[in-house]
Length: 194
Image (cartoon, rainbow, N blue to C red; front, top):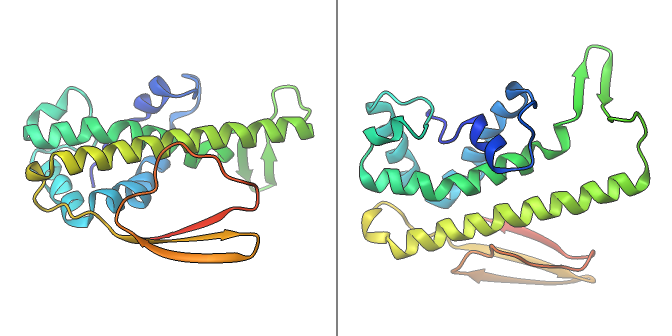
């Protein structure tokens, strides 16, 4: 399977520093493709894109080798890149300063001190990263809707949204994605079923 972004795309477009080890970020590209992009594109569209990459000999999409793909595939990759970049940052966020060794799990802090406010700041930061990811996934869906004739295999997924407020559960079937900027109370839980 071709990786649709590179580690440098993540470093160039998010708060991930250039000195972050590439090996720490690399696994998250495939995870994001499997968890978010394949579901958003729908499997037939995703598989067709992967087959086109394979036929062109592309194992990792870059700005230079993208020209070997059809214009529709090039446009699709350009549109999905921000969602993938922020999805990788979101998925890797908790683990960027964690090392698992045979001696156990260590969390690296620049000053060796971790305080409650630091953890709360990281939670807020991760929510902002999640908001960015959701916004760009929504933009990808909007692009696919507008350009549906270019992607005949794409079918918009319908899913159920289960919302729980203070013990009240409501389930509804939605025909649009619930992506974008949002705020929610601390007792809000949602589950997506694709």
